Amino acid sequence: MLSKLLNDGAGGKPTAGQLLAVAAGVGVATALGYGVYRLLQYRAAQQPPSEWHRVGEVSDLWIYPIKSCGAVRVRQFQCSPIGPQVGFLRDRIFMVVKSADGKFITGRSHPTLVLVQPAFDAQYERMTLSAPGMMDIGVDVRKLLESSAPGSAEVWDQPVTAVDCGEEVARWLSRFLLSEDFGLRLVYYPLDRPTRPVREKNRIHRLLTARDSGALHDATSYMLVSEGSVADVNARLDKPVPALQYRANILVKGPSAFEEDDWRWIRIGDTVYRNVKPCTRCLFTNVDPETGVSSPEQEPLTTLRKYRLKPGLGQSPVVGMQMGIRTLGAIGLGDAVYVG
Image (cartoon, rainbow, N blue to C red; front, side, top):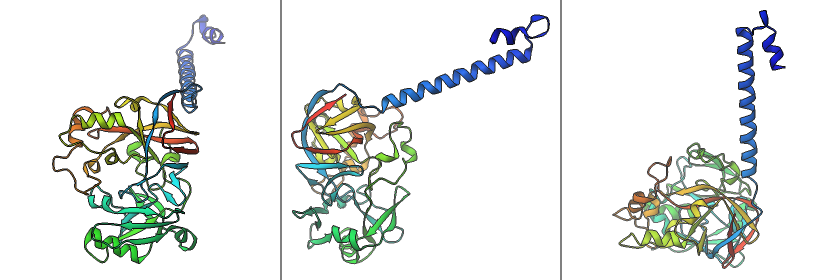
């Protein structure tokens, strides 16, 4: 076909038009071939491996029911499409928002948020909040789902469905955080699936998808860090920080420092995860979870910037990884951690 096209010109010589047509055809074929190659490569990257090797075991598990507030330590949790859960105790399912515009606040601007400590009853249906100098207050999570009409709020300028938790807890939070009777509200995410697209700044991570965005999370619904990584940072600090300060869901013992950076697939119990994004660290990392005070020396962030910056991620150092759930199930303390 190609030789016929080239020989059909006058005197048996190809014309300029024929040469251009051939060049265009070759270009199209090359582009198509490369496109098919990239598609196959992407599909292969989405398939879990057939072989796994053990790297450690789960040493701690945390769920943070209210974004930027205290953690609830658990022995096991179910892994849902929107994050870890035990009954109505779910990860980043609540958040504190401004009354005026529905935009959320975090420990970056309000570090004392970490002193708001949630606790749940034995049935994991009712949440109780405590904070220094405040009387405890209860929130009936089941009732919120059954009787409240959904409204809306914003997470990083992305709209989300949200149920308002009422005047009493709104006043409680405003008094503790603002020393005012108003200004803040507590809202709840009532859906069982993610609804937000990948944030524009995170689109450089090609494996990160909208199904990984969780409930009210910043980027993904699961985060893991290793004890080795925490210890490596602490060896460089004058004042060590607890693993809890990195606000992971899963702490793993066994791997060497920052080994988790290079894991592609992770299996724990009957769950499977994809490493979709390095966990970049912000000012909130400097907030002591026990005191709600941000480090005057800006540690550990200052030290991390000396040796944990990654290409393309600016001045946000990396500790831990953010994962997307690919096979649902449950995990518990002591479960073996495998990578592939």
